[in-house]
Length: 464
Image (cartoon, rainbow, N blue to C red; front, side, top):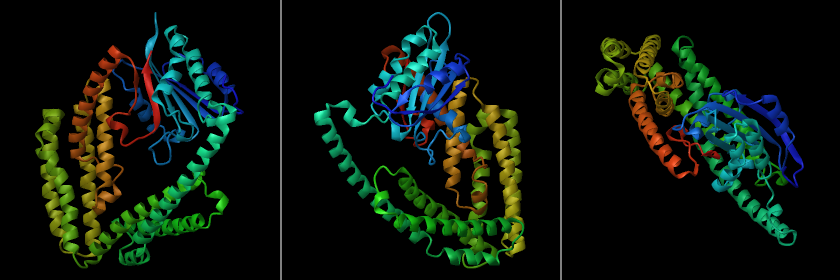
């Protein structure tokens, strides 16, 4: 048991997919541990294989369970106050084997990889003896003595306390300065990107409030509400009492980050509103906007029709159907281009609806391609699926068309399949090669693979 601690484990959640634990016993044993800060412990067991990167597997599992709130609000770290223990079971007879990973919220992180491996090693003997529950509990017990452990507990009382206080004071000063700089940057970004927001929203009053235009008007209302809400939050931060402005005020850090994010969101939506207003009213360079609207979808269709690698992976039958669909859709899209060139709000609205329909049909076809091309190797398939999903997310966020703004979370770009499949297959191949090296040399594994997408959470895994 960890010494000097006076906090407790606030919650224990066991997801025993490998069916190797007694969940009730594990929950009771871990709940009895004492910690230096309130900690939520989440245990996940899975059936694994030697080539698995369980860091990536754990991140993917957490992303698939958004309601569990295992990740920070921005999705780049593990949730504060959370310890995730992943047990990947490979052999359940004779001598147990597999991998174990430990993942920490930033406020309780055990930063050193060697220290993390030391925690994981506390469970090895139990795991090899097939005593999976005791192994998990041993790791949680060891982690309880390290997470959020005050610096003064690691030195003599004589020298440790003064040094710790000095370090904390210096860290707080640096943190407050950094906080102030970030707030000024976020505030400047918000002020610049929203200076014309009322004019932008007011101009949409001339957009027809039905059909596709109703979406535009709804977005305008959302932008104005978000602006008002962010303005209140910004003013509240600016008026924060001095005693709240310190480096350990996690909520204040998050509020400042949210100001920046809100500014980015408003800027993005405002650009959409300006394009839509120009197009609906036939003002200025509306014909250029219209051509760009058509061309974005046309490029997707031409890629799906002409790319040899995509057709090869899809198979002859699916590829032929996709080719025929894209050829017909391109003809239809040119007809939409001609009709839209006549202008007029009602006409534009109908044309946008038709473009959205074509994009929806293409998305359904791409899912058929994905199913037909799915690798038979399940591990490779997981890498490919994640790489495709990551590319879709990134690529769709870069879309600047009106229809692309509204189908960002659903549209399936053919280019995402082409790139994602290649990246996923390459990542799987590298993971297999890496695993062979790990098996031969031992050691700890860090990193979340190509599917991490900039994830920076603290954690690592090792074999036993």
